[in-house]
Each structure stands twice: as structure tokens, then as C-alpha cells.
Image 1 (cartoon, helix red, strand yellow):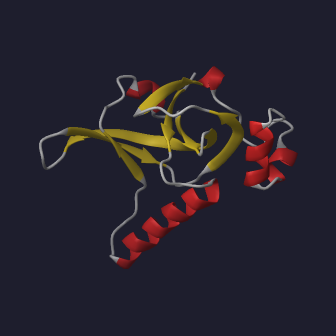
Image 2 (cartoon, rainbow, N blue to C red):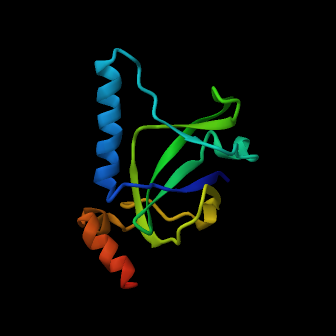
Length: 146
């Protein structure tokens, strides 16, 4: 069973906003003549990296709700130019919306067990929910109706 990570997506207002940020970075790298690999840099290296890579995802919290996920392709520890240890979470650029679930703010990232992870929208009868606008899903989840 895969292990996942949970992280706040600071600055994004919606899944669409987050996807736009990814696309803007991809286009910038193309204009600069560089290949694009989406990665998120974090301070700490997950000690359970082997359980995450190859099946785990990074679940993003947007505006107080777990909203979407991206598969983790690799976890690459490195030392930055100041000599500080860091970690690159290399992600597949596909953003997968999940059933919204409230989540309080926290610092860094958290482990998320597969049994506790929200299901993807459209899996097992959630197609109607996946067709709703994100704002409507968010409001219904806040009211406890989703």
C-alpha cells in the first residue's frame, strides 16, 4: 500500500489557478530552451521515501481543503548553495482533482496513509461531483454535504 504526502499549496486560489502556475513554468522553461520537470523543493527529506516513490502522491491543500494530487516520480535530496540540505519532490505534471476534504493549516508536509487519502473525483460514482465547478464543490464540502 502506497504512502502519500500532504502539503499546503500556498498562493493558489483553486485547482485551475495551480494548473495555470504549472503551465506558466513549463512555458517559461521552453522559452529559455530548458527541459521542464515539475518539482517542489522542501527542507526535510521524507524518511519513508521508498514507500512514497512508485505509487504515492503529493496531495495539495488549497484554501483549507485537500483538493488535488500529483503522483510522486522521485525524491531527490540535495545540498543547496548555502550548504543547507533540501529535497526535490519530482512530480508528474498531471493534476488529479480529489473529493474535497477540510484540512487545517500546518507547516511543512505530513504523511498521508492510503486508507486516509480522499478518492479521485470520478472514481466509483463521483462523476457528477467531478463535473461540478470547483467553487461549488468547495462550498458543498464546507457545508458537510460532500
